[in-house]
Image 1 (cartoon, rainbow, N blue to C red):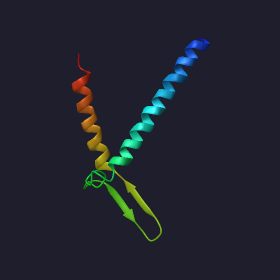
Image 2 (cartoon, rainbow, N blue to C red; image 1 turned 135 degrees about the vertical axis):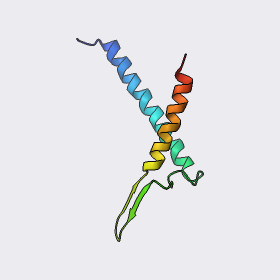
Image 3 (cartoon, one colour; image 1 turned 30 degrees about the vertical axis):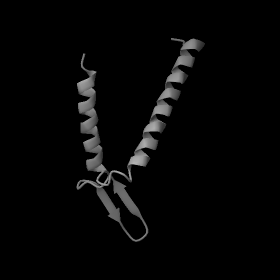
Image 4 (cartoon, rainbow, N blue to C red; image 1 turned 180 degrees about the horizontal axis):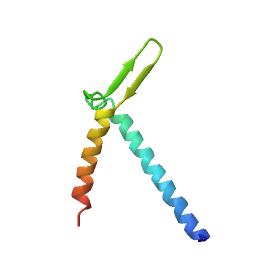
Length: 79
């Protein structure tokens, strides 16, 4: 299947819009990180600090955000 130029243009615009939305989400998340003190420091987050390196994996924060987004999308996604 060969895509025409107009279909290829629509695909590129879609990817561009997706990148813009992702960039906006990252900017908002960066601004909220200092204002929501418990976000990113939940009891299930993994944080290891040694002499010359640090490792941080927000496991519980990721699970909490996933649950909240799942609830939001399931409530507003029904028709």
